[in-house]
Length: 156
Image 1 (tube, rainbow, N blue to C red):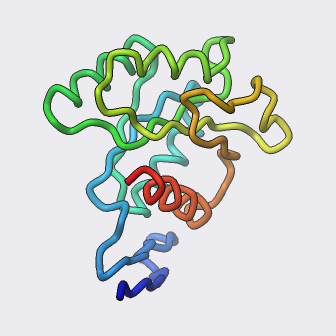
Image 2: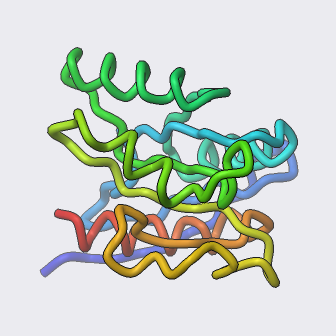
């Protein structure tokens, strides 16, 4: 029987470290996320949340850069587990752009589109696309952790 426990512990820096365990192991440990976000402050916030959750993260500032990083990491045997992208990237629907990024990959990362509350869903319906989830980028680290663990569990 698997023991699931959640203990948010103060880290001394004002943040809580998420120590969600499944059988003593953080299911997000050793995972990697690539962030393709135009707003540096949103990227910084997500990097902080992901670090709290035990997820390594890196940035791509352009679609070409994201494609190169995704392909490079896959060729090194360390493909990205998550891809966070803006709902709109350079004026184009993030759903369409993420689909194009996945074309040459053998290991498709879980794709999350960052939105802002009332704009959630303003991009055309994501059903049938490469997008696995849309989330409000202002969400807390704990809420993001719940979403990532659910998505990770469903992809295994």
